[in-house]
Length: 273
Image 1 (tube, one colour):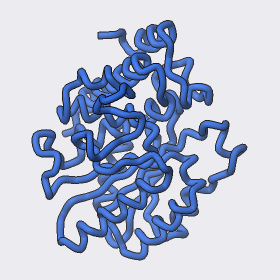
Image 2 (cartoon, one colour):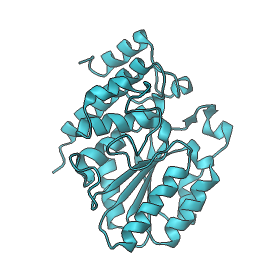
Image 3 (cartoon, helix red, strand yellow):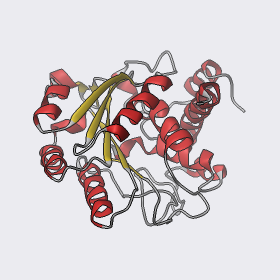
Image 4 (tube, one colour):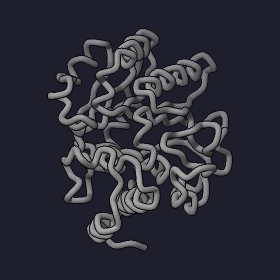
């Protein structure tokens, strides 16, 4: 039985950590980090086979944050899981610190791929899934893309290859929050209809509310039941989810909260610890 109350509490903790670390850093990306918190909570605290004490365990599941600018949500999940001390979160983006603005697979335990150049993380995840198939491993690979990331041609090359190789051990989430740094996706460059496009490329597609933990869990189960096709979980989300004044506000894509904003956000999330 899934303890959804415990998962919700973890998601809230991750959101608080995102606000605190970005305020301390004075820079970073809150909007798309907050929108992905529920997805990473389910993956790291319910679904994936991982061992924080043995990050390179050969039979582990893998997660690749293809939208690497949302590194705070990944760092918060890894720290909460025990991959490294939570004190490291307060050093985000500092010179010589472990946690930089984008994930670094060489310097941070639990980070599977250095990402930031959009589309490349998705391609790397397909390579990991293909390698697991060739090695006859039961490992599964999960990746998270931003919706604006779909404007990269590399994404569609990877989508075509994943279907061609029948990578049913690959599950991709799209954080469909509708906004990117320059404004609404449909103004910058329309990405719809996302579900139809991935189906046309040969993927199994599941659409969910990306903030309902029950729907995230159920969608992952459907992905594991699907054979001979990769699965796309199209997660409809709210940018800045959990902080009222950040929700659906494009200005919070890449602006760190100042003290007044951070205090207000933390109060909405149950208060600073």
